[in-house]
Amino acid sequence: GAGVSQSPSNKVTEKGKDVELRCDPISGHTALYWYRQSLGQGLEFLIYFQGNSAPDKSGLPSDRFSAERTGGSVSTLTIQRTQQEDSAVYLCASSLRGQGTGELFFGEGSRLTVL
Amino acid sequence: QKEVEQDPGPLSVPEGAIVSLNCTYSNSAFQYFMWYRQYSRKGPELLMYTYSSGNKEDGRFTAQVDKSSKYISLFIRDSQPSDSATYLCAPRPSGYSTLTFGKGTMLLVSP
Image 1 (cartoon, helix red, strand yellow):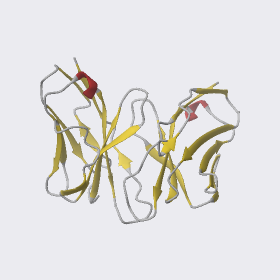
Image 2 (cartoon, one colour):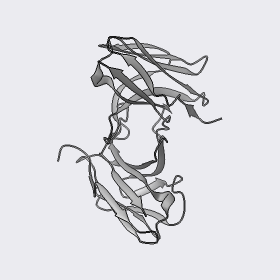
Image 3 (tube, chains in turn orange, yellow):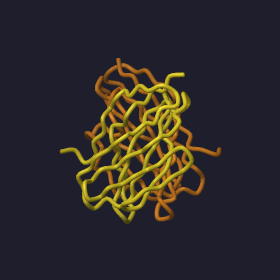
């Protein structure tokens, strides 16, 4: 596709369940980012991938959060044992890092609600 | 002090007004200053960016950076209802690193 694709667009889960969120970046973009946006809050950085490696995972809030990227393309963000405070919109972005302004192209997000 | 601060608003203006959106930052290493626009239930999209101090104009939008006071502004002339969105500033240092976003200012332009 032409843009960053995220799935599911909406996810409702029960506290304690695991969830997986998927991001399909723009073809050819080497850098991939995950951000979290809670109600009334700004974008909180979670993790950055360059290719398949994650040189910066400093924003992951706890060890319940993990992410991987395979084939330099699709990425999955996994949240284990979800808590109510995990409810947020999870945004994925990709970019041609190292070129131009490094503009981030965002997907429309996955809205997670933990009951 | 947070690295990037923005007044969350909402800022409500009538159509045709001149809008001023502002951002302050604390990291003197920031060299690129980006403004992203986010419509409701959409991902942010880059609106414009400037490098170092000065002004940059793009149609009805003007971005202004004053590095001496660590103050960033986005001006919108002849505001339209379609400008209603949240505007996020995102400065970064030279070299490539993760963007730090402000919380964003919600703008509402009424017809």
